[in-house]
Structure formats: structure tokens, C-alpha cells
Amino acid sequence: MHGKAVVVGLGETEYYKHGQSPISEFQLAVQSIQRAAEDAGLPTSELDGLISYMDNRNSPLRLAAALGMDELRWSNTPWAGGGNNSAAAVQLADAAVSGGYANYVVVFRALAQGEFYRLGSSAGKYATSRGTTWGYPYGLISPAQECGLQTKRWMHDNNVSQEVLANISLACYHNAQLNPRAVRYGRPLTREAYYESRMIVEPFHLYDCCQENDGSTALIVTTPERAKDLKKGGVPIVATAQGLGPEIGAYSYQKDWFPGTYLDNVGDMIWERSGAKPADIDVVQMYENFTGPVAMALVDMGFCTADELEEFTGNGNLEGPDAKMPFNTSGGNIAEAYIHGLEMVNEAVRQVRGESTCQAKDVELSLAVGGPGYSPGSAILFGAA
Amino acid sequence: MSRLLGDDFILPELNRHNTPWFTSGSIQVQVCDDCKTAQHPPDDVCYSCQSFNLSFETVSGTGVIESCVEVNYPAYPTLVDKVPYTVALVSIDGAPGCRAFGNILNLPTDQVKIGQKVKAVYEEAVDEQGEKLLIPQWEVVE
Image (cartoon, rainbow over all chains, first blue to last red; front, side):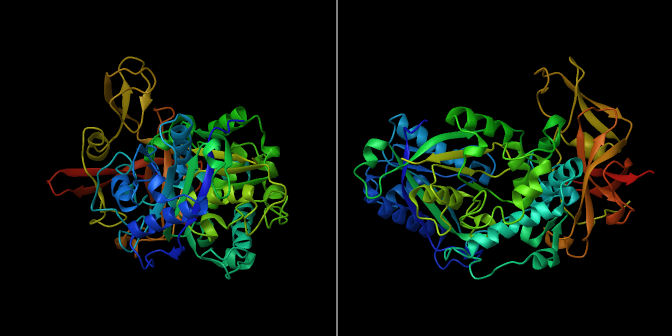
């Protein structure tokens, strides 16, 4: 049990459909951090570290000035990718405070797609990067298509049915109906509506895909000693891991990497570092860029075999606070909001605090997993204090 | 041959790694001069033995569909009247472990299957620098 770093504050702005935030992305970032500080009982002047990921547009220097931070002792970001780094970003905060380099480190992710471009719409007339040049000229542009190629082959090889993907989507929607923060709150989904929804790219229907949202999520990491003086105490970080995987784009599809989530080695590290095993996990937040990679990740991290997926995900086994495996209890990226998975890390902390709107019972180990299908994969395990 | 996704569709910006693939009118893979391992896409270093001595070699131009998806949502404005189309991942014969993206031409999307054998065909394009491209695509041969 690591436990040298704890989460002491959680903050969220209101979550919006993409392009609908009434305030700027920078204002969203500031607001989520203010709320996390308020939740912790800390003045923002005492924050001294800032971490984000996925080509964050909100400079830590600008934020430190705007928030009135007295010092900025630590600012960085994990390399590459997108929401696969949601847990890796928190690992960097853990490293900062447990190494003594900073006292109160913020991890945040802010998105306003009206102010900036809509995700996935940025392709120009020429494909210029290592990640795009081999796919864009063939109309292979979106993460849905990339994950579709992975998922279709994996389903083919492992005889996995569309029902598994439907079960995952329906569980997210089910749990979001308990969560007033969720953008899809009050919008329940039926199995019929799932199957009738339009195809985006084989094998993904509309409801297999995460939403696109505006909003910001933040959390604050410090040491257990400092947490004692704060409003809600701290939720211990038991273990974190970043994994190895190939570079993005066509590089991901070579040799033995394909098809894969790049989370099997992340799972190995989490289980080794924590001493826990999948059956010990009380509640899991599994990043859904798309439902397919979630199914793959459940297998790669050892929660079940491919043959067991229909039972593991079906019969309501992922739905509600009393589920066999409480899963994506806030609604996740599919039905709460897509703040690149950081909102799911907050939910994992909330489960330990006992503050979830879909609260699992007696939570001692709460896992959040970063975006499967893109490397480096990452995961973080929280434990009861 | 004109392009499946439109003659005005996205082109690769040519560089030392992708020029053989997109201009030669053949299937070119990078092979290590020292350990003879083929790799795709190309890079500055052999991923198997870390040699810097790499060359391009022409392979047969046939392959097998490893995965394929029907694309329904147009992720780029000019694709609105091009969907559905098939994006495939093709393993390249003669280059073990190497796989390339492409479209499957001249076959309805619902008839494209994993495991089908394919051969390369080439779409013509000219970029803004006046360079002529011959973009590899694939047709099912059985």
C-alpha cells in the first residue's frame, strides 16, 4: 500500500454539450480549481503545482497568476495521447508530493470546444504528422474509426457479441440517471434505442461513443500529514501505473500490438504494486472512449475472460450501486460528461468518500482506468483511509 | 484512377519516410540492412536491432485484410457524400508483422471481410508542389 499521497479536493464546473459553455475554457479551468480548493478547505494561494494532459491549452503560469498562487513549484504533463493519461496525470501529482517537490498539486482538464475547435474536426488539407499521414488520406481520421478497427478484429477473434457493447453503454446510462451532474441525466436509454441508433463506424452505434462536452474537472493531491488539517481529510492513492505501448496512428497496429488496449502491463503493475487482484476491486471507473475498448480492457486487466464478458456485463451486473461490479457509477464519458476521464478519477475518489450518487457499499478499493486503445495506458487505485 | 474519397481529399505531406509508399506505384516497406527485419511505417531506427542502416524494398503488392470497418459518420466535411466507405488494415505479404491502412475499392462495404486476400491498386493525385502521387489502395482478389 503506497499511501504517501492523498486526494483532498474535488472540483467540477457544470458540464455542457460541446460548444455550449457560457464561459471561456480558461474560466472553466479556474472555476474547477477554485471548487476543488473550496472542497479541500484550502485557499488557492497555497496551491503550488499544476498538471494537465492531452495538449492542455491553459498554461500553468497563466493559471498560477490568475489563481493568486504564491509559488509554482511543480508543473508538467504526461507525454502523448489523450484521456489515456487521465490517471497518469494524477501519478505525476503523487510523485511531486511524495517526493517533497510541492505541497498541494492540482490536476485539471478543461475543455471549451466552442471557443476552440471541435474535437476531431481539425484535419487540414494535408496530413503532416507521423500519427496522421498513414491514415488521413484513407479517411481514417477519427478515434472511433481507429478503435473500430481494433474492436472488430478483437470481437472476431474472441467471438464477442454486440450485446457486450450494448451492456456497457446501457450501464453508463443507467447510472447517469442517478447523477444530476450528468449531461444525460433524465435521458434514460433502452436496449431498443441503443440498437436503433445510427451507426458511426462499425461496430459502434451512436451510444457506443463518448459524448463531446465542455467543462472542467480538477482535483488536489497532497501528503497524508497535510491532509489531516483539511476539511475532508484525504483519500489515499494506493497504486498508480503508466504502461508501455506503441506510438499512435499506424504504429499502433504493427507486430503483436494489434489488437490491444495497452493496459495489460498497466494491470500487471497495479496488481503488483497494490497487492490487490481484480476480484478485490469494489468499484471501477473504466474510461469509455468507446464501448469496445472497455470490453477489451476488462479482459486485459484481468476482470474476466472474453468468454465471460456477456455474463460480467449483462443481467444488470454493472448497473446501479448494488451491481455485482459497480461500474462507471457517475455515468462515465458516455453519459456523465467527457472531460477526458478526469471526471471519472473524481468519481473514483468520491466512491471512497461515500459521496457518489450511485454509492457502492463498503468501498475499500476504487479503481479508475485511463483511455484504453491508446498508449501509454494508465490507471490509479484509491483505498479507504 | 481517381480517388475513392474525392480528388480534393486530404493528401499526405510527403517526407523521407512516406514518399516511397505514396509515390512509387509499388508497395515499399522499410527493411533493416543489418537484421533484415521489415517495419512499417518507416522510421529512422530499426525497432528490432536499433540499426540506423535502413533501406526500402519492393514487396509483391498483395496482402490479407486483418480488420475492416464500414465508416458511416463523415469525420471530414467533404466525406458527407462519400460514406459509407471501408477502411481496412492490410497485412503486407513479404513483410511479416507489417500492416498498412487503405480503402477497399470496388466492393460494397458489407461484402468486405476479415481474412480476404487483396492486391494493391493505385490512385493518382498531384499535390500543391506538383509532385505526382500514386496512393496505394486495395482490391479483393478472391
